[in-house]
Length: 111
Image (cartoon, rainbow, N blue to C red; front, side, top):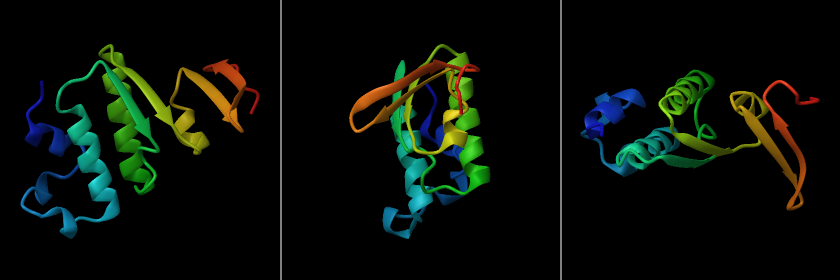
């Protein structure tokens, strides 16, 4: 298990540890939520729009971190509307109006 400071460093917030939540931006709060979700070293991580409030560089850093977690054997389920985020996945399940319209493995999407 990683200590909270290590997680905060991984999500780029080590310099904000003394700030109260109301002094953090939306993107910073989102990164705190990611760090908190990882604090107990879960085997399955469910992330709903994990990069939605982040700039592209920070979003890439978060996705790279998720990829490292997956390489360590963690299962990640990511909900996103962003095709660039979905491109990180080995499997993409596309849902429209509550119905699965496509279930594809990495490399066989017809986008």
